Image (cartoon, rainbow, N blue to C red; front, side, top):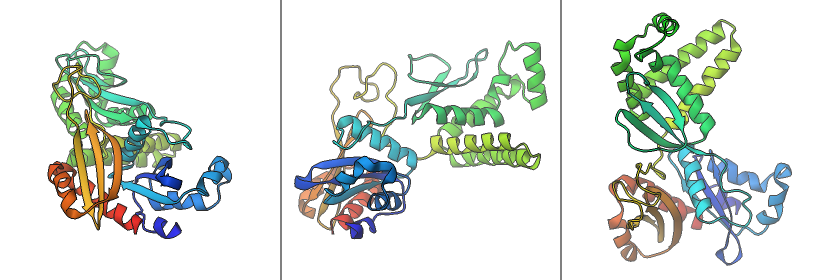
Length: 317
């Protein structure tokens, strides 16, 4: 078993343990797959309830993700589809969206739990896991891109505060454009905001304002979480239900999309429905039999699927 653990990457992802008869015993996520899985064969003083389970583990399987945020979403999706007997919860983080309001009198950023409907001048980004992280990230964006002070109809005090920050309503469109770029994950825009937040943190530390420096560091880390690559859960537009595709009315059947990878006689398949990766399976399979599944895999998923097929083959070996 430990030989298989040594084949795991030092990367974020999801892992599961199988016991007798191939039964899934437990599913979890990790920032570092190898370190986390190896810990089950170490000191379990803080996880005593898992000692019996570890003795029953016959096989380890894993999915390598592109970010810790993606791993968190994948764990949540899989646990909501089916919770193994040794899992105590289905994931603790709450899904949220970030609302960007471009209307002149109410311009600003906010964290919301759902998209109430289509409104002119209002955009939604996400979904993201974790309301606290999302609020910290929005606070960080507000620190370096103070959009609220570019609104119309501000009080005299608010106008004065905006003047101190060097912001007025003429800056509104530029701030909105930058925020769209950051929330859309554009690398250059993200890097500029990160650099400004890091400068704020360092200036606070130099002034011995360590509490403020710690707050800005938390905002920076939360922003990294929000903009990290994750494609296992994408937003369903307002007016559709989870399980419906973009532009398809509620209740309309949605065709399932399969993503697959093959390596060294192992086929790995993921089922996506309504923008949500809902299931993960793997089995022995010839390359010829796997070909239809591989041909149907969307190009944007090829690298993810192939990487995880290679991982599955390594762990099976």
